[in-house]
Length: 192
Image: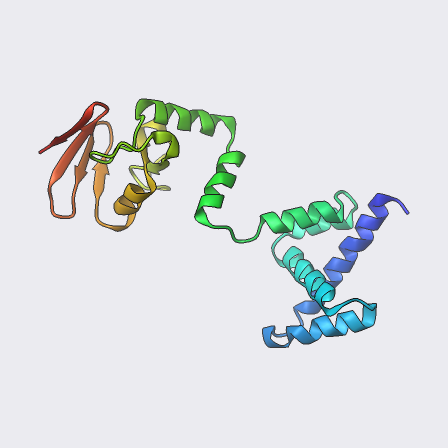
């Protein structure tokens, strides 16, 4: 048997399992794994894993499933794609996003960080390379461009997004929740 044929058979098997598992309500799914294990002479754990893959491919990654069924990719590649689409935390998500950004976005990030080498929050000296890039005018209302992006460390990004701080671009004029204004320049902070 060729590798393409094996991949196609495995894809069809996972597609069938994905359709099969959706017939069960969430509380009865453990019985589905036992039923598949008995029919195919597998362990219940192996059957549960394959059912989970089949359901994930059927519901979340139908194009990956189609490629597997066509023999374009093998089961190892499909498994990698399943694992890479699991829910990930924010730090890992940012790392993945950075790896997937086109060169223009990376160049834009480098440009923004070169113009503001530290977090632009008043008196914060955290290097821009370890900061998140924040939209002054929130996305999607504001563009992803050099004049609407600035580096903020995680703590100050959180303060701006969720705790009442506001900022304007160019010279960074910060307004605290109490109404006090702080203006930051690349050379430091001035209080108003």
